[in-house]
Image 1 (cartoon, rainbow, N blue to C red):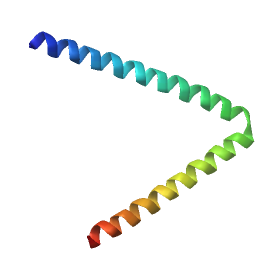
Image 2: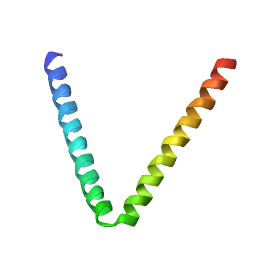
Image 3: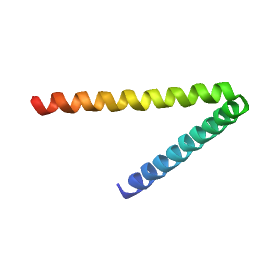
Length: 69
């Protein structure tokens, strides 16, 4: 049993490091691509702002409905 927990813990750590590294590499290459083109950077910035506003509206509506339920 302790050996199984150790093995599962190591698998979890290795999987987490692998996925984290892959995400960092993809994010870095995407950032480089956006930085090269001001139009793409402006589009990505605007999309990010719109998504944050949308998230705030969704959370506000959800909280209002949850308070009345």
